[in-house]
Amino acid sequence: MKCPFCGFGESKVIDSRPTDENERIRRRRECINCSKRFTTYEVIEDVPIIVIKKDKSREVFDRNKILKGMLRACGKRPVTVAELENAINEIEASLQSALDREVTSVRIGELIMDKLKEIDEVAYVRFASVYKEFDSAESFREELSKL
Image 1 (cartoon, rainbow, N blue to C red):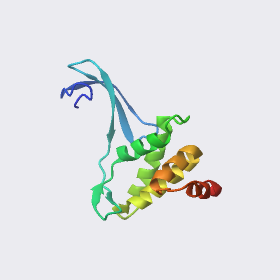
Image 2: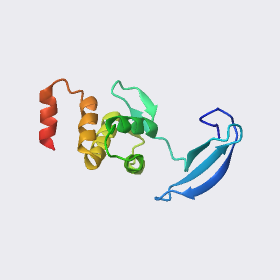
Image 3: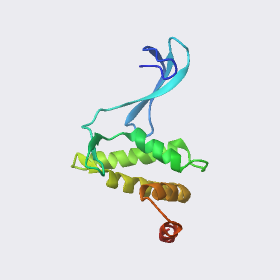
Image 4: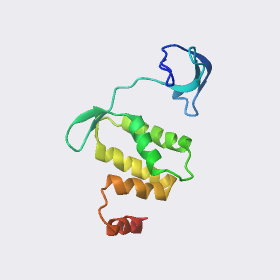
């Protein structure tokens, strides 16, 4: 496992335990070179989900992209990373359980907005404003009226 701090290729496992859902293994590791600690998650490899983007290009589903977008929307809000991880786990599980291996980015965006609406309404509006490309105050008013 490559160290995220110094890039060294070897680390030792300090602690290993299953996550709450028992679908992943959480491992605390220590770099042999710089002695810094970091966390990794071991997941059963599934058939990849292919995301069809708006420009019709395709790419493999990346949960880190979702996390980054949700973290941006939740900036300075009382939302924990654990809450976001749980939401992403639920989104990914619903996509994995679907029979179709290809999903549109629009569908993923809708799932993210549904989860954010449950977690924090301000974060939901922030995400929706970028995702739906609001271009006026009226767009915000319309979305807020739906809440």
